[in-house]
Amino acid sequence: MPVSVTSSKVIFDALKKCDVRLISALPETWLVHLIRMADDDPDMVLVRLAKEEEGVGVSAGAHFAGVKSAMLMQNHGFLASINGIVSFAHLYKIPLLMVISYRGSFGERDPWQTQGGNVTEALLRAMGIPYSVLDSIESVEKRIRQAQALAESSLQPVALLLTRDLMWEE
Amino acid sequence: MLRLDCLRAVYPDLEKCLVVTIMGATAAELHSLGHRPNFFYLQHAMGLASSTGLGLALSLPDQKIVVFDGDGSLLMNLGSLSTMARYQPKNLFHVVFDNESLLSVGGFPTATSTGTDLEGIARAAGIPAVRTVRTLEDFKTAVKNALHTSQLTTIVAKVEPTGPAGYVTDLSLVENRFQFRRYIQSLKRQ
Image 1 (cartoon, rainbow over the protein chains, first blue to last red):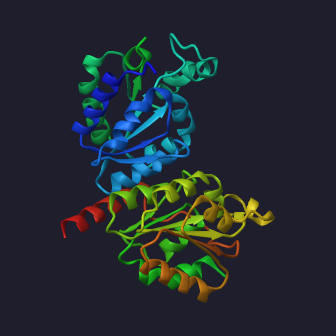
Image 2: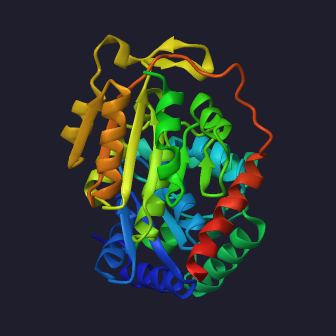
Image 3: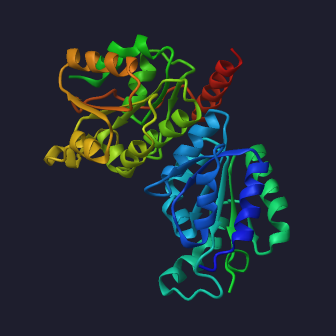
């Protein structure tokens, strides 16, 4: 599977450096190594979800407990989480670090991913969620650190979009 | 059985717990008994009270977490039962007030009114201790047991579809959230 182990490792290490100690995740191809790394790390709590919206509640609970967390999901998982983001994270000013695989964009071969790709950035903008598109490995660590700093200072959700260029090697 | 009577009966036992409630009548009734800084009322985002309890329970393994859920909310996030069961935090206690109604949004009957069995669903999801109670005495006993055992527990409490006249309290949502987090931080400093 040509999912980039190198990029996954850089992302995971950056999350660790930000003191992220809990990760919620729903399996998706591009996230397979990241989820495995979280599972293998004894200092990381990995919560495998049935549906991504649960992750908003899990991260809110972790935030109340003083634990920094991240949510790993596909952009369709972001779509499935929207009410939780609006009616919990925005309403109650909860910081969320959303790490989202950006499926359905340039280069996508799976027809079923394409519609979600079309609307992802437009929805993030409509919801007023600050986001950054990660397409090169050099900027990953800094962007993750900056994203988390903004989430924590502004007490709101922020999103990082993991692109094909970053996550796929072929 | 009235939810308010259930809440009143266990109110003293909640003093040392972290409590998360769903929206509407459940939040308003617990608040009416006397707000405490260890109570968090999730006034929207139906379904996520149990997920919030899970996040708290996994992050604070030495704290007892109590979630007051409802049939309407839980039906919106049944997957949460499977996620809770997957991790089985010993310090998480999940109470579902089942009034067979979406009371707080107009009183529409939920699927539990036509036979959906939340106890059965919770058990089949893998929650290790599950029980349905129909009387106040049984509720009190079940809660006492759950608070003193180290096992993930779901109690389905069948209650009447009644609640207070209004749901808005004088506690702003954001104030409640900051107060709750600050209370947890104060526990850590002790």
